[in-house]
Image (cartoon, rainbow, N blue to C red; front, side, top):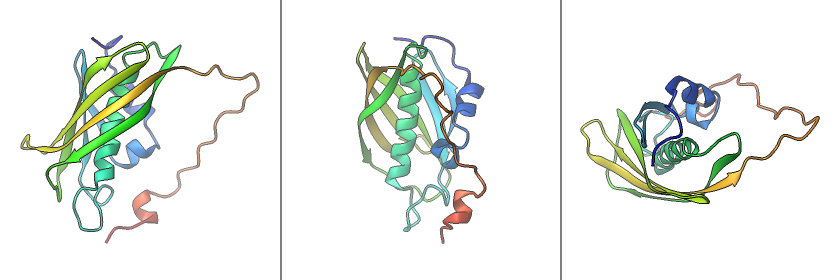
Length: 165
């Protein structure tokens, strides 16, 4: 299994502007023929009230990497992938720094995909391992005279609205 085309990291990261992905500081950093890697800071945006990496932030990183990788395996003019199920085992706490996730396919079929995402600290120690099941679905055709989807104007950062103490 290989991606359908070389991965344009700048385009992938630009596509995530003003979304949960960019608000959490997730950046896609590397891609091989069949794997995708990205990083996420462990900071005020991604920790829980006890000051350690929030499990939901790890799951957001895992789903981001798996979903982006999954879409790189389909003809996105005709199809897209959507998440069916995700699970995660959190094995090491993080209080700062950054985590790096790597998504690798376990199965890429016509109707489903299964991805394993390993999230590690800067020393290469496992922080979280996740498995993501994706459905391959037809891309909806744009309706005639359909207005562009509304995107809220970004006037405040998440940290300014919800400061973490």
